[in-house]
Length: 484
Image 1 (cartoon, rainbow, N blue to C red):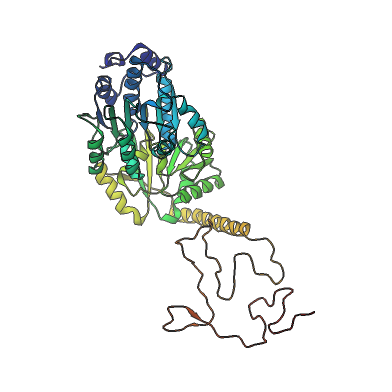
Image 2 (cartoon, helix red, strand yellow):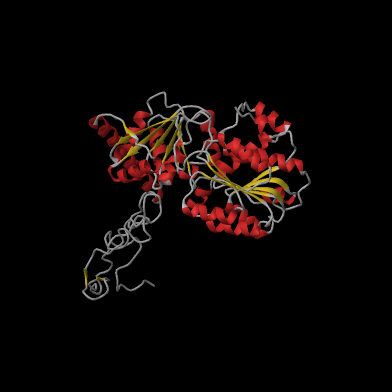
């Protein structure tokens, strides 16, 4: 059986692995570390949770230590590209842990935080830089970072990079890299678009594939519950009554949906927090820290976090909504059953999601077993309570937007009568489709042939203001002479 000693790693790295209680390398580490140590390009295909980070971090640290020199200002020697802030921070932490006896500098660059501290760090030069593509290009455009000295570049989670729309950013970054470099490319799936990107990024790579594309971890017990969409939150609160669900990740499709689910769980006395792209970096870090420390039982996340959360001991993953992309299902449930542990994945499936379920089963090449749930009557009662809470939240949100008590003769703020907009905004303050939702005039008729514009009867002279609510305080009827 292969050990880390058999892979050609130096003693400082072996000491760090022993301190971290790493006993044996995973299959991808066994296959990837020797060729990367030899300076070869590598194409690695492995599902999440298989030890990819150590597979590239360990040999990169050793190669940098073997050719140690001080990086020039505004440069880095190794560049690791990550799709999300959370994943970037975790990769940097792994580099620091593995290389703690090697004296190599590690820095992170991602959005959501100030530029100036990053500029100061980059100005001194760093050995290892872990970055998200958007913020990296910001530094390149400002000329606070040059990629001319990069010796090794890693593109991690390449398929999610493309899902998030980073393909143009990756090509711009690739064009700024030296022609002579070592390139490592990791992806959980290998569709045609990823293959084309890899072909332009790598030179004569060693291909390492430890599992078939889009397979799920064997230790995960998967199940699906068929439930109406409007009863999902009630069902989630119900199953969270099980104390075995001690550390649960819940995935939704939208940011707004994540917030609603977290609020509902909180109202049901289940400690929860939401994490998504609209949260500030400090909010995301605080939610993740509370989840890791056990101060909250549930973390509700969008797919931005599916590959950016590396938390030991996640007991359950709940797909509150099935993902539109089948491969995302693999990454979501891969947050549990890590480091040799068992885990459970529960998916809620509404009637309009059955096609998505079939796509997932076809992609993963396995059938997901259906399981029972509460009685319809009990679930309906719980759903009614949830819907009532939603209506109260919406009313409270509307009251907070108004200007308080209406003064005599004045219209409520943002609410016009007599054919003007009554409530052309959603509850979250944004228009639903860029148009007025209730902004059509109601008085008069629509004259044929006038392009849909409303037709109004002209008011007779001298009748004053006929708008509902009477004349405004301090006003005068039309036609009345002004005093003085």
